[in-house]
Length: 96
Length: 338
Image (cartoon, rainbow over all chains, first blue to last red; front, side, top):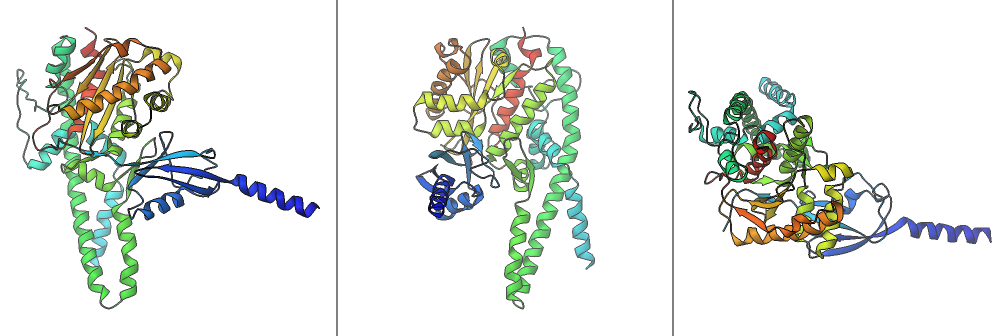
């Protein structure tokens, strides 16, 4: 009996340790990740899928830059939170 | 062998440079003058304001901006302003020497990197595997981070290059320039007004996002007013925003809380596209002030479009740096309290 409950507990904790994150860039993708994953891995997966370098996008959570070493736990992310993938802006002169 | 050690000497010299101060100097103090000198490889042609025998180039901080300012805010003690400009000009001259040395060092280093690349390719014939493995550290060297700002944006060495040799400017550099400005203003409250600056990234996000305006207003506002107490929210004079358009051009929107105007500044002749994006930002900041500052008056006023501000030289890509100068100039108390 105790073994079963322990298993269920583990399942439950496992479930709560994973969250859905929506990445909103040129197209929006929802991924399910562990809370302890480093954001660097997530960024790399996102950029690799689009065949671009990892520093092409700047990832923002509520307008704040996300550092590669941070984890969803450190960022206090909740299930269903959105990350914005912004392309760096360049500019200098008018192009008509 | 002796050559290699010579290269390493140069590299260590580069490492000793205080990048923060270099970038700060480049962005805020006479960058345009420095860049012009380096690009043209001869002194900038001096013009105007030579009553006391000293000349000022048209791009020296505020010299031309003064005319634009007079139009908006009237005149005050010109002599005091020119005296200040004179000291600033001397600082610029000092920094010009630093920048020239820096550019030489950077160019030298690029030569070294190229030579190393050539050597590596030659070596590939004999030792294929080693040649392949050697490539990685080389790319890392190019991407060497020289400065990380408060918001986590990083400047790499190639950005400094861009600054020096007339390239388009990345948002990270503008972010840093704004950070330097804000810190400078805070250090000298007797000389500058209290001002707020919205981060480039959050503005870019709001302008491109299709979400409703009130949602964007709350995200933008929470970030802009994050570090400010209620008292500061009531006291600030200006809110500066630099907006990107089509990844090609920056333009500046200024909210003046005292005069209750919203100005749209362009360093080149305005076009309908810029106006459209400035108006979108206007629609976002109106509810933002309503939520965070309880200042409804700003929203009643229409936007003032102006081409009166000094324009950037043709062929240059310095628009964002021009805006940093406008911002610094507008924030000065000696010009405004008339």
